[in-house]
Image (cartoon, rainbow, N blue to C red):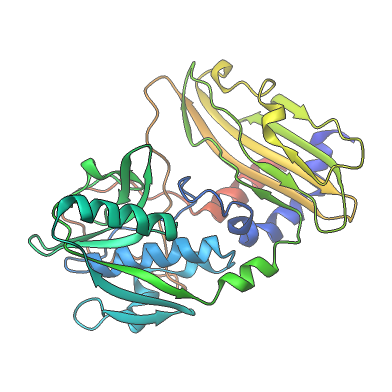
Length: 340
C-alpha cells in the first residue's frame, strides 16, 4: 500500500491519537509541545510559572488533559492574592522552600532539584519581584521559561530571562505526584519515546533523528516509516524500516541517512512517523515545520485557551508578544484537512 493511502487509512487514528501524543513524547520535555504560557496580567507570574510546571508534569505522566492545565484552571487551587505555599492540583502536591544564600550551594541545590524534577521548579526573586519556571540544566546551562510578556516565549537560557540564579531566593516544586502510576499503566500501547522533531530549520543545516517506536506489549512492529512532505502534500523524503517481524522496537536513527533536512529548500513541510504493530495498533504522528534562509528561531509556540474557551491573555502584556499560533491539535486537523 502506498504511503498516501496509508495516511488516508490512518486519518481517523490521528484524530483519536492527538490527545495521547503527550504520552508518546513524554521523554521530550525540552522540545516544546505547547508547554509555555505568558501571564495574563501583572502580578500573576508565580501562578503562571506554577501552571507551566504542572502542565509539564501532567504531560510527563501521560495525562490526556495536560493541555487544560492553565493559569485559569490552577487559580482556584493555588491562588490567594499570591501563590500559596502549599496546594494540590489534579493529584499533584506543590510545596514551597527557600534556597541557600550562598550562590554555589544555591546553584547545586537547583541542579539537584532539576535532576529529580524534570517538570522543572518555580524560582522567585523577591527583589523584583518576579518568578520563572526553571526547566532544566543542560550542558552546564540553566534553561527556563519566563512568563513576562517582554521576554521571548518558550524555553530560553536563563541569561535571557528577567530572573537570575543569584537573585532567586525561594522555589516551588511538586513534592508528590499521584498521577505517575496512571501514566505508567498506559505504557503498554504502541508509542513513540524520546522523539525529537523539527520546528524551524535553517536551510543547509541538518538535524539528527532521535527516538524509538515501540510495539504494544506482546506484539511486534509490522510497519514503520518516516516521511517529509512539502506544502502540496508530496513526499520529498522517506525511509521505511527493514523489519523481520520479530522487532518490538525500532530506532529512528536508522532513518537518519535518508532524512536529510539540510537538503530541503526554504518552505513549509510536514514531518511524519507512521507505525503499525502485529496487534493491529496504528500510530501516525505529524507535525508541520519550516525551512528558512534566516537562522532558526528557538521554537514555535501555541497559544492556550482554558477549558471554557476563553483566551488566557485577558489583558495586554506590558510588551508586544508574538502573534498567537494555532494549538497543536488545530495544526494537525488543519494539516489533515489540506491532506485529504
